[in-house]
Length: 100
Image (cartoon, rainbow, N blue to C red; front, side, top):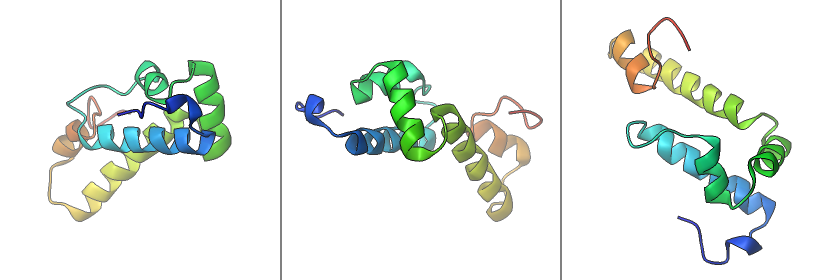
């Protein structure tokens, strides 16, 4: 997951690492829940520092980023697949088809 020389990573590399981590885990939501602890551990940064760096690079908070990706994924599947709304909602980790 994290290279041995993780302390020497630049902020660009850390943000790229976090984006890749989020993408991997959003594709397989049953494996584990994405939270600030797991992201902080992956980046070897404190919660505060990670949140600040991520927002400065991405223009949105980690929570907003994850929420947007989940919504975009659900919208694409609604448009392009024949899956049921309930099935799409569940696979995109929404608790119901009526809420976020």
